[in-house]
Length: 103
Image (cartoon, rainbow, N blue to C red):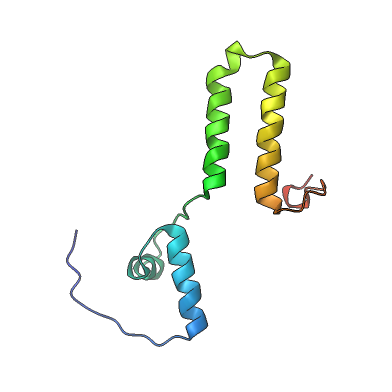
């Protein structure tokens, strides 16, 4: 890793600083690293929420067990995964219109 010996000072508002810190935290990066990557137009990947990871694990479980499962059991598991995904995607509003998904 290259040694970082040069410092850049900039002035920003308190709100801008909070937003930058929040974005850096979502990506699992320090503020310095986040700003460096942003300024150098490098890709920044947010860390998925714990809930998304749990859905991923559920999908993996279904994939691994699919040949030992009955079709109705598979459908039930997929319905649970779909339900949990939509709760995360749409927030706690479960009115069923799924407008964000184009359905």
